[in-house]
Every structure is written in C-alpha cells, then in structure tokens.
Length: 182
Image 1 (cartoon, rainbow, N blue to C red):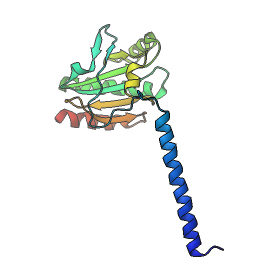
Image 2 (image 1 turned 90 degrees about the vertical axis):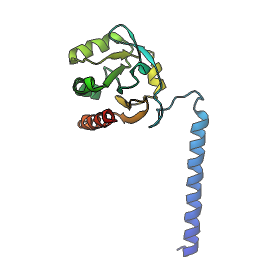
Image 3 (image 1 turned 180 degrees about the horizontal axis):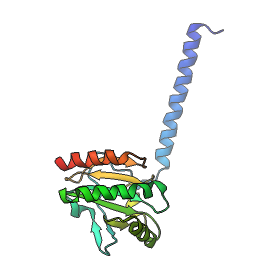
C-alpha cells in the first residue's frame, strides 16, 4: 500500500506525463499539417468567396448573393444522408426564396452528369454547382457529407452543420427564419 502523499505524488506525475503527451501530439499534428491547409470557416467570419459552374450552364459566385441569407450544402450522389436531405432542403428553398433566401447545392462528385441525373430525379429546383476539382470543398475544409453552412446577409458564417440526421431540417428552418429577420 502507498502512503497518501505517495499516491498524490504518483497521480500528479502520471497527470503531468499525459498533459505533456497531449501537447506533443498537438504540436506534432500542427507541424505536420501543410501551411496552406484550409480550415472550416469559423462562426462569425466572412464566408470564403468562390465561383463554380452551375446546372444552368453559367458560373455562379457566392459574393453575388450578398444581402441574402445563403445556405451552402455540400453533397455527393454516393451519400445516403444527402439523398434523404436534398428534397427537404428543396422544400426549404421553395418556402423562403422569395423572402431573400438562397440555397446553393455544391456537388463534389467527379462526374457532374451523375449529379444532374440525381438532382432531376429528386426534383431539385435550387442551383446545383459542380466542384469536381474539390477546390471549394478544400476551401471550406469539408470532411463530412453532407456539410451545410448558413451565411447571413453580411456574408458572415452563422451556422455550420456536419452530417445529417432526420429532424435537422427543423433546425435549418429555425436558423433561416432567424437570419431572414435580421
């Protein structure tokens, strides 16, 4: 049996070792990451601007929508939750577009034709943009499908959602309504 002071000393030693290991792991990860690595925009920061070709055949630029509430939804045809979420997002788009809400669906598939087929099959009416080179996905550090970013009228990121589960659309609608009132 250890004396109480010995136990406390051993605990403090082990605790210090774990803290040091955590710091070393964090520093190693930071040093190993490329300097140009993008990070998901932070809440309150200005959303990075981009231009992508859309399903209309024209290029669309995010900054052209300043003054509107914008939702960017990153999706892929191979993503089951995306297929579930897209029709719900389309309903949100239809309900609030006349109030100043724009939904931009950024598809990350290598083949835009597959995205077009799926969008048509699902009855999507919002603009579908093609990011087959993954430039915008990297710019927004997208690492989950789907990923959704809500931007206010001033172009600032206000909400970020990673993934999708049934019921998220209620949160989306509440957030869109809040931003439209501002």
